[in-house]
Length: 387
Image 1 (cartoon, rainbow, N blue to C red):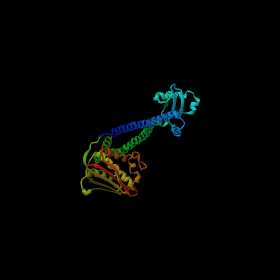
Image 2 (cartoon, rainbow, N blue to C red; image 1 turned 135 degrees about the horizontal axis):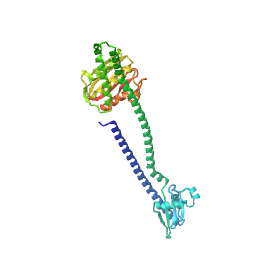
Image 3 (cartoon, rainbow, N blue to C red; image 1 turned 90 degrees about the vertical axis):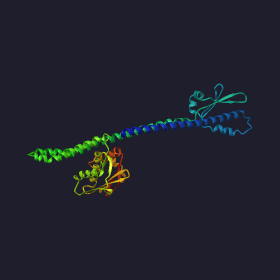
Image 4 (cartoon, one colour; image 1 turned 90 degrees about the horizontal axis):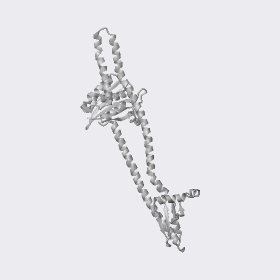
């Protein structure tokens, strides 16, 4: 059986792999888009360079408005036109304030452009050469940096989510441990109190005959302590699963709860067509689940009402349903009642149903859920097991 911790580690690795895949895909696709935009900007600069050449060689008789429109259409790509001695003849799309404050600013930009790519050679009819240097537009720069910004945001989100979930998980674990301690004390309290009472009773008896008469009751309380110890030991280990007669197992639990219930509570155990229903279970842990559900049903009906337990088969599944005539559960709370720490009881600690769900879902590979409930009418829990 794979433990829940191993499953969580597997899920973490899968999520990490998916995250890396998303990041790599984002970087590659963004690089592809940046490359396409860079090619378009290069074609645009070549067009503008050709336009400058045509303007210089123009006789002045043709309409030049279209050429000026092409030049003016460039509002994003920074460019510098220089001669063969690197003397700057023209610049466009640079910060005018930086140009005014720093005379060497444009020369620095020219040096940076020369290091990035080869210039566009503009050769005039007189044999004169001018060179157009250009850099990346603001849009292209932002596009190249976008995946890294996205990666940083994702990491920040993961970090915040991890801290939030870790804090919530630690709080939940603390509630579970506190609840487990209280549940242990509660489970042990009844038989220990009974044994203490029997010891005091036996001390007062004048002969061994009277003492011998109470020994069967003492043995029952000792057996109860052994059962509780066995239950808690199996929570932290892989329990042994055996095919068990659920009719007998549930009747045993009903008899135990019935002795502790009010005489005004009516119990009924029925099986579809009176058939025997078997399932692959861990009897001590399954008993714990049934006991918890029956105790919850008793609390819900408040000392007077009915509790009906029905068994049936559906293909390869065994179905157990526990129905009470109690106060019911609101529809929005069907899932919440299984969370550690959730309780509607003033003196409860909200661990019984959480343990029941873990026992059925994780150890028995089954399901436990609220089948139906109505406020003031009662609740039906359903357990689905492998038969």
